[in-house]
Amino acid sequence: MAHTEWRDAPELPDFSLLKRLARDQLIFLLEQLPGKKDLFIDADLMSPLDRIANVTILKFSLYTSSLKYTYFLSFFPPRRLCFLIRPRIQTVKWISDLVNADKVAGRFRRYKIIFTPQKFYACETVLEEQGVYGDVTTDEWNFYILPLDDDILSLELPEFFRDNFLEGDQRWVTTAGSALHLLQSVYGSFSKVYGIGRCAKMVYESWRELMEEGEQRTRQPEFAKVFLVDRDVDFVTPLCSQVVYEGLVDDLFRIKCGSVEFGPDVTSSDKSIKVMLNSQDKVFSEIRNEHFSNVFGFLSQKAKNLQTAYDKRRGMDIQQMKAFVSDELKGLKQEHRLLSLHIGASESMMKKKTKQDFQELLKTEHSLLEGFEIRECITYIEEHINRQVSMIDSLRLLCLLSITENGLLSKDYRSLKAQYLQSYGIKHLLTFANLRQLGLLEEQQAGETLTVMESKVGKLVNDKTVGKLTDAFSSLAKKSNFRALSKRLALVPKSGEEYDLRVPRDMAYVFSGAYIPLSCKLIEQVLERDGWTGLEEVTRMLNGQEFAVTARNKTDAQRIVLVMFLGGCTFSEISALRFLGKERDTYYVKQIEYMVNIKLSI
Image (spheres, rainbow, N blue to C red):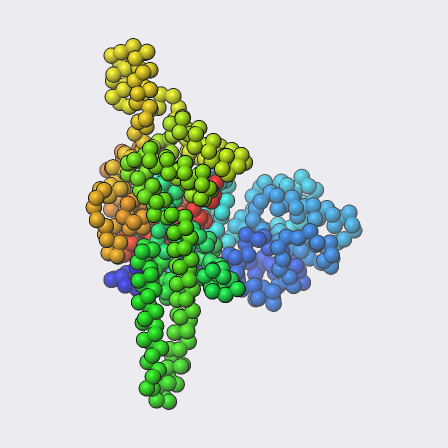
């Protein structure tokens, strides 16, 4: 699904500009503290920083050492200390303790804290409360967006989902709004803005305020439209097991900041190798969006083609061999190395998934999505928990069961919860409380299992009879919003239909033809209708908060749509949007606060 195959495909903006802007601003801020300095970098910033500013360059021009936080700073010479950190209260308290310890010991140093992507009033309040506000200078590095690939941008904020959706902390809303404002400043205005969700609406309002305050520039826009979507609009998609290649790599090896570390089981050596996963990897770019069942065939054919390219050396004269070595050999060796790594990764994934009985897991998920054989699914989940196959997968199945069935019956909820706590530990009581607060794992309350038919019958009989009817219907869950949404948007293809994964016909291929991601289907429908007209029933079931705004200075733009997921997204959704873009000769640029599955954000 490489974009080079698209006919009349629009050209993507040059996102390297964002890297240069961020790097130049960082260098400027560091130079505000003259002389030799020791720069201490928050551990979470090491990977993003390495993507935009070569650490070697920074060391050479700006500082003498780059360390993660340590308690041995007292052994450092008394000079300038600079801290590059996320705006976290605990980190600011640690720095305040260091400054106060230096005061007691009589050490004189100059301190500078650079917050990124922005500083918050709460952090400055901590400095004031600790009595070091006048000893420390503060600044902010507006590092809002990190380009991970040609069509993926990230805010790299792993705490966004928990802070906003679980704890109700809305401090990152302004950060997301500022990121959109930066994109608009660099690449021109958007012609239309769509969104759904409470957070999406707040981000738009924050962004609009920045637009009104700032200077309006007229230039040819490089984006056509922007779509803002809250993660809690679609919890089902990130709870389903990923089966596209890039999604499986993320599930098993953890893709962080656009790179992954392959261990000895992949490299066939005693060393681990860190690999960048982007469109520059010719092997990866061709299989990243493919269903895993197609990957081995592709890699096998790739290996044959590579061998054929090597065999061209036979029979060459001196001049031909010289041209071959200078023009092709280096590229072939690089491709051979990458091919070996991806073959090793595929074999490792196959072994792990076979060991975990992956096909049975997928079958259970598909049954839950379709609403069939629910009791059999619950039995499988119980067996999965009691065998301690996977703590995370067990939790995902419980959440998927709860969402698709609009909550668990009390007896099922209590039984499954008790079994989970017995298998994985009582410490997960807090996990269940958090999941319940998010609406991911809920117990049906008394009266919620009454169907429409029961309600009508209840008007004709006495309360005692109604009680008996309620018990009789206790195995029937209330018709959930997911079921209604699935039917309304045709998210689950009709059972019995054959689906050729080698030639996918729609976005359902990312889940083996069993389910079209709700988030992606919404985006498709809204863009087709040029708004929410005709989707009133859908938005009502999604608790509304939808909006569509047309820019005043509407101009013709390229067919590039920016989709901003607030709360993270999965690689399955990214693959689905790439498929949709290919079908419609449109680019979908994905902007996320952090690409991580919900199952790791609780």
